[in-house]
Length: 209
Image 1 (spheres, rainbow, N blue to C red):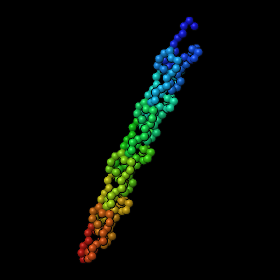
Image 2 (image 1 turned 45 degrees about the horizontal axis):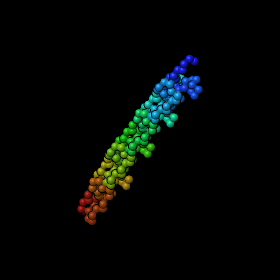
Image 3 (image 1 turned 30 degrees about the horizontal axis):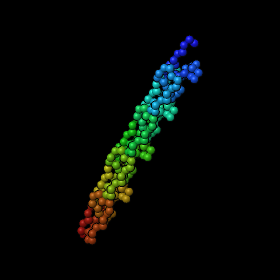
Image 4 (image 1 turned 90 degrees about the vertical axis):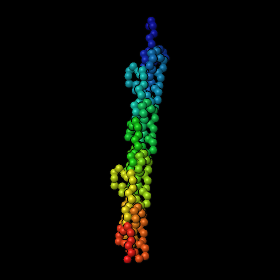
């Protein structure tokens, strides 16, 4: 040869300076006349499928992260998320969840809580509630109050037991007081009528004989 020619961007010269080789997957060069290619930065990839090599690396889109060898963008697992050009999928914060390949997590609604894997919002069980969004646990209803757990979206509040009824031990139902006993609103115990007084079942008060 009467002259040498520089290797094009996306390729590099071999040690013998006899051939221009394309940059391998996970690497690139944006300049001509290079002896080596550069590794893609974290969050960026080059798939190496072009016969002329890669002149740039492509940013991984939100919900995906770069593989360790920078050759592909991989989906974040459910319960994790990423923004653009990240190399790590971060776990959703407490009380929030995500599906696979998510760019963000969303807080669980009031009446529900996030499971340990942060993949699903579950309704509060009977006898419990949460009035706030983004919770990891539900609170037990106070004595004299109940949540029946029949709503598919869970309970945001507990309901007070009406006079003549008291909350069950597991706070799931209001139970009638037996005859000879009574209760006022939001009680958890049926009290015995005082001496000389009586009541029917489900009574809010006793009356003197």
